[in-house]
Image (tube, rainbow, N blue to C red):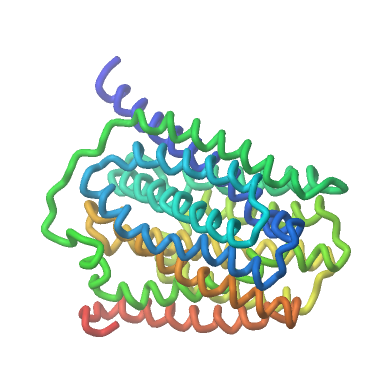
Length: 396
């Protein structure tokens, strides 16, 4: 086999292994996100307590910058993935024996700590490979989104007319798949350590010009998903919508996301990373405003297509901006900081607040999310202006 053929085979193998890891990870997420609050409610946990438990898992993501720095420094992200995936499985097994609220609090924190590094590590590996021209990030990442669809639809069909206890069993099975997938991924060669003058630490990443504005936009746009992630399923169940239909609600939104990811490189080339963030903010504002006014099945199906904007465009825009502005050796640090702030701090605050809002206002809580999306859209617009004019680091 000649060198060109060997190189092509190696690139294909790398893309396949990363895609399978994304599939396993998002199969877990596709069960957890729509149905974990249902399992918690079945254990007698109140809405405001559910919000607290969900928020704790997101606060755990604040540890990811240090994990990303270690992965950048050692190049041993695949090996770390095996450790944290085993931790995810162990914590989910332990949930089966948890009944007291304080035990649920402790396990939620542990689950958050071991789950949090997985997405930024996989994203960092994929972005680095994409920047080197070895793969198309969107086409690899879309397999994770497709897996989320399958898991959410299957989960809804599995739950309909059955005990919510099945949610935990399904999650445990999905976690076994995750361990096997990242175990295979660990066989990839250890990335060479690359010396670079800037930026060398996650604190230096934070001082990257316009990075604070970037984080503010992403925190608002991601945090605005809190009501949907924490209480969307409960809200629809209370409106008399069956679990199988709710599973399809979650699935159809991610189908739209998959379509965007499949054409992500082309869309990003046309509108740019900040253009994608503006699309995300506009779509999110419309989505949350409309979901606050209706639970009718047909309109909700249509509104769920806006997941391609509110999350898909947001994530592609974030990954694109990091690739454009952050030096290669610090990509894991940057994705980890992004995860810690946008998915950690923002949702860590947003989930408990959304629990209180949902407990008092039910579906009207979505209007608060629409307001937060408007603020995120403003920051995305400001980020685009600053990028165009090349503002110095002091202007953020």
